[in-house]
Length: 426
Image (cartoon, rainbow, N blue to C red; front, side, top):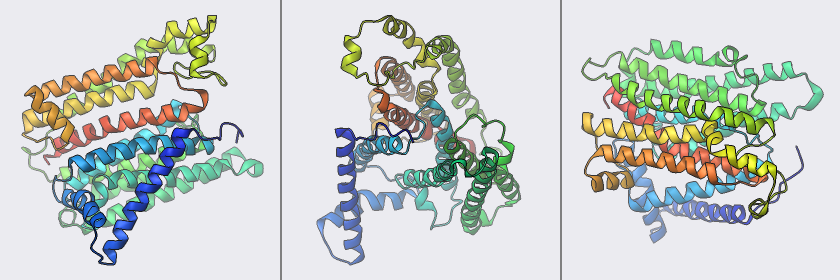
């Protein structure tokens, strides 16, 4: 622990207060419902939040103006509150943590596709629709992160190599638990019961061994980053195995692989291009101890605006290009493009409907889905501009990380789910 920067900003305090109030109201409504006491609060929560989740697990209902606005507000509150928590826990705020969390975007998206294919039983299905999927994903992140956190804090009692072996063993256990829990639900469902799950079993068992296979490739990660990354990748492989088993019985006219080339290929090319353009400027800043958009310790935004120095001039000359090479930027931008492409292909070539209210309104205004794709590409430019111009104080690095993660999730997650549904014809 560094022992620094543990005080809370006002916006962090108010975010915690607001989340506490929202949680209290929610559980009060559910408790009154259990007691069978009729009241306006329970009726409101049931109609606008509970029933849409239950309905969505059997189809594609689930979104209305009230819950859409609520989810957006709660997400923003969580970003502010969690930034304080991560800072107090002394979690690495660099982009490496974002890369460690990236598998959970795939985990959530593939889990939703498995649910779309009706492969989960009735008890598990509601956990893989919004907003339940977000809380469940966060739970697995917390479980995985706690492994690395406690292994890190063993101190000098054991060697680093022993810590690595303990961490690997614990991660393998958590991946195995995922395999058992989700595997039981899949095999118990009507659809899963009719499938040959041999491929799923083979891939799932292989997922348990990932901590050993990835040992060398993640050696530069911190303990927390390692545990989070490994458990996330293991879960992704488990859901991938389930979808492969499902795809093997699909008729040829239902299985479509070509959307993958566009929806995944174009964002990958965009990531490579942005990284290539920005890496030289990023290295220049890094060699002098700077990260574009993060102010040196002890300097506020107002101080920086008034500052006149050679270092500031150097940072300002390189920051626009440098941010292109940061994962928090190129992944967020490519995620928006991915969502736009998946929506365009899904509606234009597969006859899908857009269920998200704001996206549907944009499509309606443009009169076509390609206009929506262009809006998402434009949003990507705005994201680059934001990170190129915004300055975060040194102890706000976790806020920067979570803002990037939020933008990444709301773009890439629906894009991945969309292309997954297109591939298996759901």
